[in-house]
Amino acid sequence: MIKVDNLVKTFGPKVAVNRISFAVERGEVLGFLGPNGAGKSTTMRMITGFIPPTEGKITVGGHDIVESPIPAKALIGYLPENAPAYSDMTVYGFLNFTAELRGLNGDARKKAVNRAVEMCFLEGVIHQSVDTLSKGYRHRTCFAQSIIHDPDILILDEPTDGLDPNQKHEVRTLIRRMGEKKAIIFSTHILEEVDAVCSRAIIIDRGQVVANGTPSQLRGKSEIAGAVLVRVSGVPANELKERLVQTGAGKRVLIVREDSSGVTARVFPKGSSVNGELARSVAEVATAQKWRVEELHTEEGRLDEVFRSITLPETVKTKEHKEDK
Amino acid sequence: MNSAFGNVKTITKRELTAYFASPVAYVFIVIFLLLAGFFTFNAGYFFERNQANLESFFQWHPWLYLFLVPAVGMRLWSEERRMGTMELLLTMPITAWQAIVGKFLASWAFLALALVCTFPVVMTVNYLGNPDNGVIFGQYVGSFLMAGAYLAITSMTSALTRNQVISFILSVVICLFLILSGWPPVTDMISRVTESQLVLETVAALSVMTHFESFRRGIIDTRDVVFYGGLIVFCLFTTAVIIRNRRA
Image 1: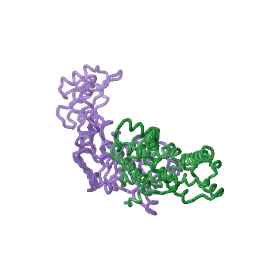
Image 2: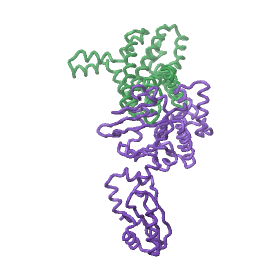
Image 3: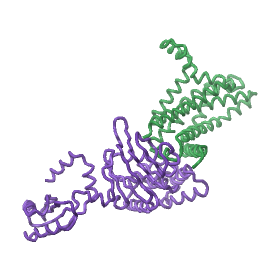
Image 4: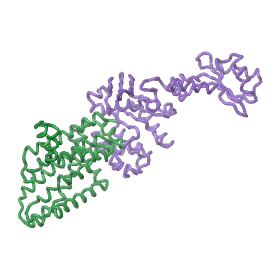
């Protein structure tokens, strides 16, 4: 449904988006991840036809967004960042207006507005003016606008920003349900959302795609995927580390935490395989040394850790490593 | 998908409703009528003149509009930019042109409404004497066209910035220039800077005052209509160029 090919956007000397390519099909929910200023919003603005690309090609449902913008835009529902809405209108007036611009008239319009109001839980504020709404309600009003014409394609720029946990949950459920029949792209900072909603995720950093895969594939890229976390009480940190290194159970041992009640260490595997082997050998060492083990498990990798390791500049990373040691 | 006309109508309707959703519309109309009345009767000596025409009413319009029209139009695009709704509007399946024309027409219709509200002055002059109502009609047409030209200029300046105050000041300055460009002190200054007669004549021909002259006598001259129409189209076209180049 959406095909992005070698997309480039420059603002003066600054390259905001640098040769991004990807495709989204119907039934897919694509998560857009990346630090602030990575080019997520710029990419979305280009797909929705708000700003023209400097280079590259975007086709939406077979229509080129630059050459035939009107039929392409008609297929898209768009929730811009910060959820803008006309503050001088009521929620009902605003939704009616957007439905009219989408070409809905008469009964069809009434039905579409009611459906969107219901889906976004706006019944209570329908006759309220937009500038009196709380942030969450304003956000949902703008979200309602994006789904009013039941579009084939949804582009959502931080759809859960500013919502409370319950509302976040509702919006995620909504996105997942709609994702079965639509092609959806949404950007977020919240990594747990990727697991909860996305069928695929792309990490963008400094204008480039740095990772692309299902959430579990991305998690597998984690440095700590396959590492073993062990917590032992009554043993000094140095001794714990020494013994583990001596027996050669893992490649590297890192003390994660040390306090009066015990020491937590992470043992990294020699290969990259995720299996129980490393945990078993750590357990054997512990038994031989008669350590009091409080916790022992193999880690499957965390998205936030992958995210950090991919998007942090090298200098910061090495500095952090030093501090760890 | 809608027809182009349908989209323009939708946007015009929304903009007009927006004027009346806030006190802006009422404040504007009241101030406009009060000022128009003051200038006509007190500063323009309507009664003392003892003439059955509306000369003392219309002669103030270029100056009244100088401040009031930019005040009406300054929010047209700068507000969209500031609120971020421009992103919403321009990702709808409509062209930028339809949005620009729709917004312009809404403000122009609003100004027309304010102008219509001055009807008591027409009734007064008709009650007191026997004016030529054809002339009065011509004067109204001229006044309306001039308001449209000022408004198109304001549309252009408001597309430039997210700040309404800047948009207001810029359009007042441009409109003031167009009022004064036929005025001897200005033409003298230009002739001191350049020898070219062409430049001098071009600048003088840009004056909205010169083109308002025949309207004030009640004559609807095609050249003046073309001047105001051309100015409006040019400014709206520039608005489109600005919006295309300065989106985010």
